Structures are given as structure tokens and as C-alpha cells.
Image (cartoon, rainbow, N blue to C red; front, side, top):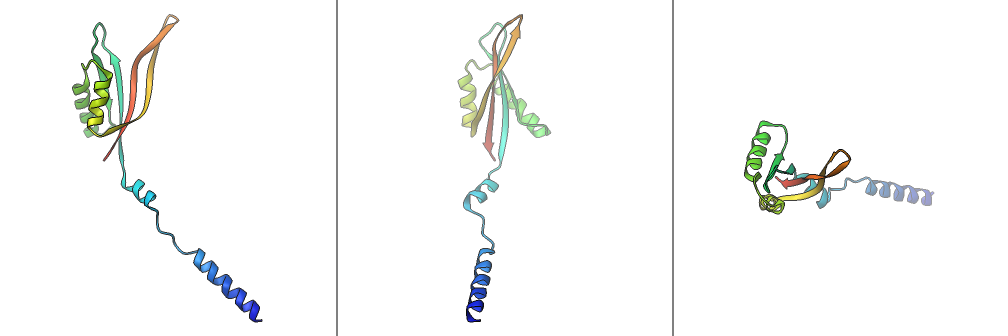
Length: 122
């Protein structure tokens, strides 16, 4: 009888100990605190010039559209893609992904521009 009571007591204690709530880890807390703003940057060459045409898209809200137009105006007419990236890095953006714009005409094709997907901590 003592053995059964001892085993029951040990089983109840171990179940109680394993069913306690575990606090969130630091990593989970950090990911909840960090929110990111994404930017979609499309860079194309202007016709008959070395300058670039840059379109920046932050989203659909009026504030995001206004900010995207401001960035687009600031970055359009730059000569180097690196200068566009440097400007975005100065504004605390980080590069997430790079895509290329491909075009074809009568069987020939090539890259007509670059797309950068970037994010910024808020």
C-alpha cells in the first residue's frame, strides 16, 4: 500500500511540475517587439540617357503612397544603382531580396531593370 501511495504521489508531483506555464523566451519577445516596414524598389534605365528611373512602393495607405513618391523623386535621375542602395541603407533599410526585370522582343531579351525588396525597423 505504501508503494502505491508513494508512486501516486510521485506521479502527481511530476505531472504538476511538467504542466506549469513556461515564460516566453527572449527570442519570442524580440520578434514581437520588432515590426518591419517593407519597401519595393523598381529601378529601370531611362531611354537615351545613363540616368535611372526609380519607383519606390511602401504600400497602399495615403501616408505610404506620399512617402513612396518622395523617395522616388529623390532617387530618380541617379546614375548608379549603388547610390540608390547607399541612400536606402543610410535610412536604416536592409536588403531582403533582389530580382531582375526581364524583357523579350522578337526572340531576343535581356535584363531591363532591377527590383530590390528591402525592410526597415520601425
